[in-house]
Length: 327
Image (cartoon, rainbow, N blue to C red):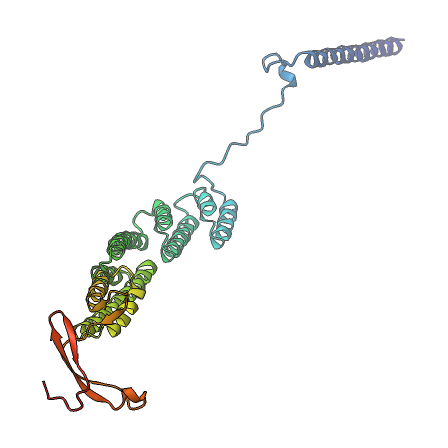
């Protein structure tokens, strides 16, 4: 009898516990539904959300420069940086380098390789004559190692090259102005100074060729002038005109040739005499000369000597003196 009552008591207690469990479960489910309904209607702030609905934060702090300590990560960063260096992407390599602790051997090795890369880029820019770009690479390399001797020496060399470039450009500008004014000898001297600093300067070499051609042309004109002057002094005016025309074909504005041409024109015009009916005669100075022709008409034969004597302002003829006396 005792065991039967004890069993019934145990069974009643178990039923009570199960009933309480399902009651609590139903209440909690209803509470969750109510909360979710409120969340849909009005987004709550963090303070309004029940603590049991908040997920614990995941701790994933950003990488701090130079604080990677995992050898695996350091090796991965190092290998990736080497690929960047091989492709001249030194900025990306530098960013990876800064993540590795400075005291680590990989960081030191990577620093040397990046600096060497900047040095080579600076050399290429220098060879192209782009000094500004070269200085940019040098400064970035010195940012990693301010005492690097190769970069320091290259910086000094580029500074000297810039000074030479300025000097050469100054010579070029002065030589160009002299050339434009026709001062070819002075222009040539300036060009030679510039080329002594930079023998391969393209603009100076081109200007030098231009000046040499101008000097050669000037010498040719001077030669034509001297030949024409010689002919004028011998009163060979037609021959003089030939040389004058050749000179003026090279330089139509040549002052000495123009003056000589005007002089010949005045001289030859004075030797022309026009009579009252418009006939023009060439003035022949007094003297002795041969006249006639062996192959001409009868009245022109034979060739004979004629004396021309000056009568006031005209020339008179002593006709048909077959054997005139010598003057």
